[in-house]
Length: 262
Image 1 (cartoon, one colour):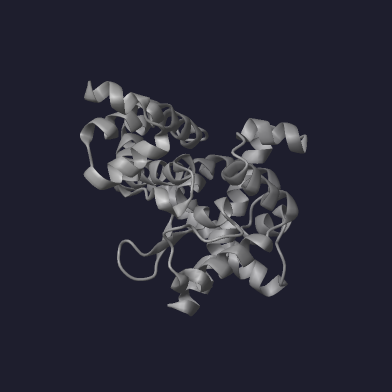
Image 2 (tube, rainbow, N blue to C red):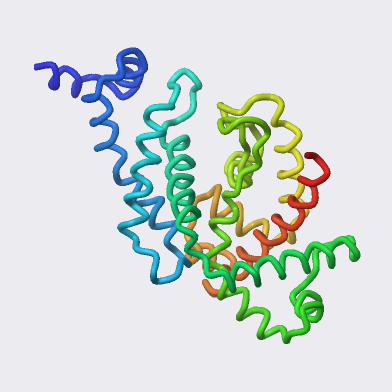
């Protein structure tokens, strides 16, 4: 009888009830309702990942993020649960990937080398460097540079979720949060984070137009790389390259800014 009464309530009513009593039956209703969201986020993370990363494993990691989102969601913040949960689910998946250290050391080293090169080059040029300039600085052909970018593209999604801690564990800002809500603070972010938020958004605004568009379409409009390719009328592999370069430029800029802030 109690279960039937719960099923008859609206989602808004269930959230208010759950906040008061933490009823496991209500939690189960939410888990069942939002399970497809976990698969959706896992599918997006899986794109561009090496074949040794199993989709089912990503889903398993994401379930922990869903539980975390359900437990921490505040219905009085006037934010849709789906919007709140996506970041938590993605974060749980990427935290687990980071903990098992799935990125080969050689790829990690090459990524760092390119990021450092981009940072020094753009600092001296005072603008975004193009493929030819970066390749020349790395002493490789443009073709080899683009091949290398494809090889490391699977790691760029993970690196975008690197967080900037401004205090304790619960007080943090991720780059992806700034792309997903570029005009407003996440509801659980406090005002002291405004400066970090500002420099992240500023760094995004300084990206070349195509790279900026790829980030917004991928993280904010929720399009796949294939769909973005159709919008921009280029191949999916080219979109993957643009995405990776955008992330590397951001990380290069923000690492330098971070040193200045902290």
